[in-house]
Image 1 (cartoon, rainbow, N blue to C red):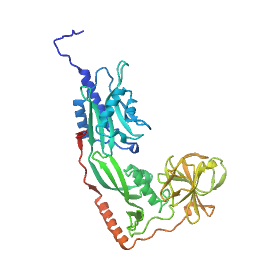
Image 2 (spheres, helix red, strand yellow; image 1 turned 180 degrees about the vertical axis):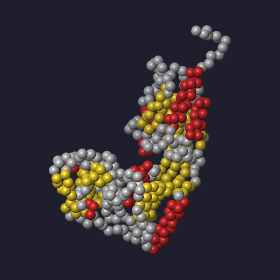
Image 3 (cartoon, rainbow, N blue to C red; image 1 turned 60 degrees about the vertical axis):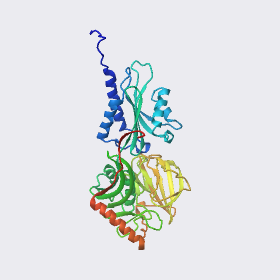
Image 4 (tube, rainbow, N blue to C red; image 1 turned 120 degrees about the vertical axis):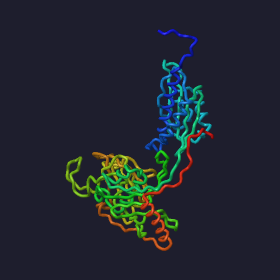
Length: 447
């Protein structure tokens, strides 16, 4: 064994190696932080920004010897819990949790944090199993395009940095052929759940989305969104235009103070009084109205509705304005919902997994509002919606319902609509539109 020479300065490799591991962990964790409502967003930083953060962290971060390599520990703030208490659940001491909270509070009001918020920590633990754990890094998103990063300096002090990304406002023109289902295709192309649901609702006024829409049918969606420089979608705006099989929908709000609506190229309101299908998601019609062999009993009997096979949790929307009459458990129908509409019509929904927010007897609903979600409760062989229509107390075939179309714009409203239509048409012809972005960059917190 080599002898120790007191005249030579020993090389302390462990702290430097640990510093590198800690910095890499913090940089990687920065891409994984998200708000509860945006659990499916991609990493928020570009490769260049991550490299910059890593270089700075390598120069400043550090951890004492005798600890393991930092491990990623996700944290979610619980109801009634403070930020300090949430951090302490990672295993660090109370004094250290207070120091971390004080550091973050220097750039962000911790009173604004709400239950459910998630953030990431990097925790190093003692090698021998004795002693306290040490926080090496923490990342927390504080806004749509900003986040805080806490790391250790070489002397063990906590260092706070803030990252703010450049934001660009876009108007996206999405063109594609249907591949599988329109809903799934639009989602894959990046339309987002909100825009996709709105498009499906509009098309459901004109088409049976299972039988009328075929593979290779082309569609166009135009919508606004805000993205960061790394390509992460911060916010998706409204659907401005939708087109399918020759049917077009332009978004426009009349000057009389009415609701925003969708019109065809001539200014005719495309909203019919009753949508043809009530599902705002991917589905297929699994059983039509009429006699069939029951899948459970095996007997041939009358099927007094239409079944739509869809995944559990697929949103169900009101096909027309109405009032909730029933929202209860009903035998083999499982969770059941019935809505009364005008002209003696009622609609019924069975096997629901759950009801929409605020849905209860006596509640008014509007066309297109989410009223429930697909499930498999009651006598059911799999997740699907059993959908019924009643006319004057008698069940009728939902596919046979025909109702009147909307009204046509005139006067000043028609003139304003034509101007808005021309603007959207120019965007479609140009293939999209991008607007000015905000300043960005990595900066010390409080600078």
